[in-house]
Amino acid sequence: MAILVTGGAGYIGTHTCVELLNEGHDIVVVDNFSNSHRESLQRVTEITGQTFPIYAFDLLEKEELARVFEENDIEAVIHFAGLKAVGESVEEPLWYYANNVISTVILCEVMKNYNVKNLVFSSSATVYGNPNEVPITEDHLLTATNPYGRTKLMIEDMLRDLCLSDAGWSIALLRYFNPIGAHESGRIGESPNGIPNNLMPYISQVAIGKLERLNVFGNDYPTEDGTGVRDYIHVVDLAEGHCRALEKIQTSTGVEAYNLGTGRGYSVFEMIAAFEIASDKLIPYSILKRRPGDVAACYANPIKAEKELGWKASRGIQQMCQDTWRWQAGNPNGYEENNILKPQRKPPVLNKAADLFMPASK
Image (cartoon, rainbow, N blue to C red; front, side, top):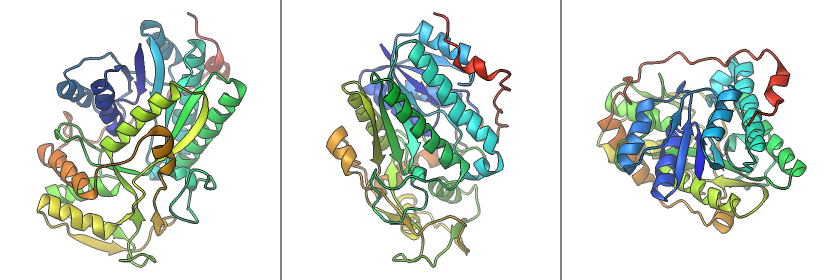
């Protein structure tokens, strides 16, 4: 039996595929490659020495998804696939709702048709909105401040309703904070299209010379050095968290949410200093005004994951920076397409809403 990994060619997806294969699981990957690279999956095979089926299509294509279940003995799904840029979600909200929410409805409908009811969902700390206290526990008020975050929250609500309607489902909602780092081999890592949206890939591209300087948004927050504080977690720790969540859902029913973070916050200036040590490069930066919606500090209370999943992040900030630099230095242009900005494929037009919910033929 196999684990279906949707969005398995992405940054977190590839690292999770490596950990799954190393732990003896068979996997099947579905990805539309709109924001990822085929080369990444070839490198997963290079690292693990194992091959696996790869399907290239959009999750909105229900018949194609049903074919995956028809051709493979799927026992559980880890669901990464989705659009993830906050700014873009503000500009293209309908695209985000169609791609993230409707595709998850289709995925669950097909899973139900094939009696596969074990799901690990890639959620996000964005469901906490602007937290009013830290560290953040799973019972913190849920709210979202942008369309991307709202898609994650809507999906979480939908999955809770699904479990209420059918006690056979077992679902883990993984709310993770700020993934950084790369596999220790330096063969897979984060390869964003165009200018990065997140701090660490931006810093690493400044270090490699692709970008001139880092923009620091605000140095007047009520933190130790005035810059924003975030919970950064090594992507391999995060991948291992998905493996532990997979074990959990295979031995229980119901739905549970888990924070995947370190429980320790680092400021922007601390991240710059750590990366300068790891890379032996100077990171020039400019101080700009705060961005609307940014908060002073955001970091997790990860105790629930430790108690119920037996998982705890083990890699420190220096290893995160060292592994990021090893990846960036060895792959200055990312994967096979030399990091050229690709036009992202918009979701297909849905002609009939009823088509989404028709049982797939078996």
